[in-house]
Image (cartoon, rainbow, N blue to C red):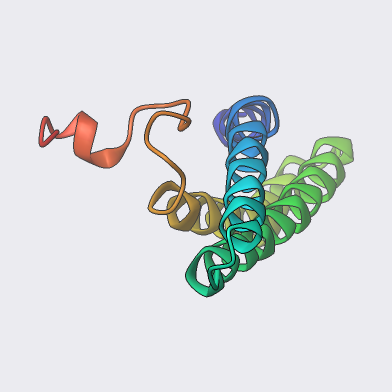
Length: 126
């Protein structure tokens, strides 16, 4: 039950907060690429960052889908032992994959757009 609650919370936060912030940042980067290019300057680094962020957004969407599917499958099981095994074998790894993608995006997305406290902020480094 605890893992299910954590998975649902993770999905909620990712879909409603993190993913929209990443998409907004990709839009900012896209505008920067356009502005720099239209000024006649090579926008290679900006374009590369945009490609990296967009690639991670696509990965995040895939990770969200995998976690949703795994959690839905586990929730349908009535046998508690099989359910626990599915949470261990499918849901937790899907959560770990989504977490890794979000962690990577956290290091790239503008701090002003990132919707939740970063590790640095939680450790009072900032």
